[in-house]
Length: 429
Image (cartoon, rainbow, N blue to C red; front, top):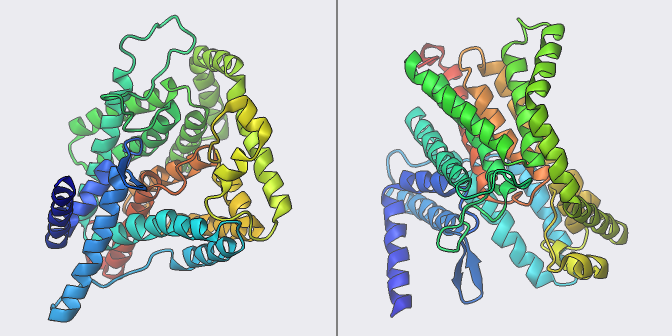
C-alpha cells in the first residue's frame, strides 16, 4: 500500500512539473543545499534534490514530446550548454568504465552522477530560464535557500561553549538528520555561493534603503563563512572578494591603497587567524587525512595513467588502503575534484575536466567584458557559480546540484543578455 501511495505521489509531482515546468526549476534551486537527507528505496539512494532533478528532467522531455506530437506553435527549443567539453568528459568516463575492475558499477556511476549532473542540473535549468522574470525568481529561490542554511548555522551557536577552541558555526541536525550535510565545510560552500547571489539581487533593486538591507545581510553571511572556520571557505571568500572589489574598482584604486586595505583586513582578522591556527593544531589528523587521500590518488594514476581506476572507484581505492582504514576507519571520497578525476579517469580524464573548467572560465571572461558595463550584476553572478566550483578543489560536492545549478543560472543569464545585445533597443530592460 505504501508503494502505491509513493507511486501516485511521484506521478502527481510529475504532472505538476509537466503542466508548470518552472515550479520544478524553483524547487530545484530551493532544495540545492539539501544533500544530507537521503531517501531509500530498495538499493536506490537519492537525496530530495536528486529525486526532483529526475522528475524535472522527465517532465521536461515529456513536454517536448507532447509539443512535437501536437505541433505546438511555439515549442521549447532545446539547447545543450557546454555540450562539447561534457561530451568529451563523458566519453573518457565511458572508456574508463569499460577498462575498470567493475564495469557495471562504473557505468551506473556515470548515469547516476554525471548524466544526472548534466541533464538535471545544467540542461533543464538552462532551458527553463528563458526570460528575465524566471531568472530573477530562480536567483531568489537560491538566495532563500542560502538564508535557510545561514539560519541553521547561526542556530547551531546556541548551547555551544564559547570558551571551547572548537566553537564555530556548525551543521545543524533536525530530528537526527543533517539536511545540509554533517560538517561546517558543507555549510560554508553554499554560503560562498549565497553571499554573491545576494549581491546580484541588490544590483537588481532600485530602492537605496532596501539595497542597504541586502548589504547588511551579505556582510552577515560573509561573517558567518568566517565563523565556520572552514579553510576552504576562507580561501574561496577571500579570492571572491579580491576579484569582486578589484574588478569593480579596477579604474579607481591604486596598488598602495589595495595593499593597505589588505593589511588592515588582516589586522582586524588577526584574532580569528589565531583561532584558526589553534583549530588546525588540534585538527592535524584532518590535514594528514587529506594528504593520504592525495597519495592514494597519485598511486592510482601511476597504476593506470590513461583511463584511471574507473568512475566511482575512488572510495574502493581508499578502502583497499590498509594505512587509511587502520587509522581513519570508513573510506572517504576524494576531498578535491582534481584528485578524484585523476584517480578515476586517468590523465586523459583530468585533461578533459580541465578543458571543461577552462571553457567555463572563457565564457565568464567574455561575459564580463561584454555585459558588465550595462549589467553589473553579471559579476557577482559569475563569482557565485565560481565560488561553489572552486570550493571543490577541497571538498566532495563536485558532481552535485548545489554546485552546478548556480553555474547553469549564470549560463542562462549570459544567453538572455546575448539575445538583448542582438536587439540594442532592448538593452538595460
